[in-house]
Length: 116
Image: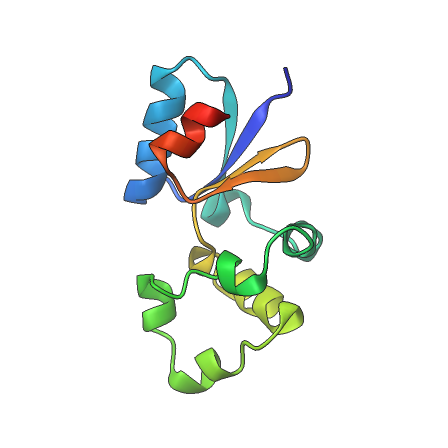
């Protein structure tokens, strides 16, 4: 079984739920902290080949809402989304659950995790 990698921020409630579910169900995983471990353009570009930028950028979160309108308006495609996510990793929708380099779940849903 390939090891799962969970990307997120440890104090995020949704990440806490995902980690709790994985641990309670005995599912081994590695945690990658966006803030401590960082993200790079290659990783983000790989993800954007799998999901649309407007799904990967969390436009409902506090980081996005705190951006000036001009910064929000500047995010219009993959390249501008990568620039924003590199500058402010907390704007990435979380958690991102990855297996073998492929996103298997964006965000947390107990039903979706059970189906994995």
